[in-house]
Length: 148
Image (cartoon, rainbow, N blue to C red):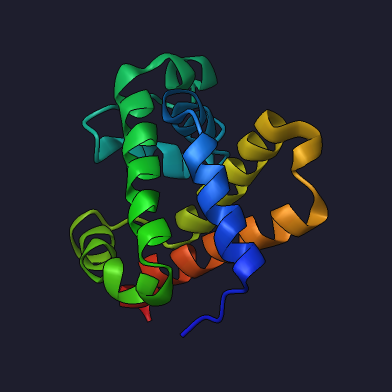
């Protein structure tokens, strides 16, 4: 079980309460940086993009999945004390059915951190970043649990 400080809880909830999901989700997913995994990952969405960054950024299915990912993170925000159980079924889905490389979760978390930092500007202090990255690390670990 993860221990959360009051600051971390408040910070995570604040970030998500102010987040524009229609902007941040698609932006984070479009910044995804592993070309080989893009093809595998987006095949699951029935989209074959062949390493073309412009096609990925402009694809409505990719944008929609970016929003879905953020709404999925809402589940973790609401269940901070049991994120692993919250994502148990999603971990099985991604590992056994979608065959998503678990490193993709970390890469997407990094992309999301960059987008959120850019949107928050000076408000994305070192302490805020630490809380946000701790949250994402727990999510990534929980999504990868089925792989262990």
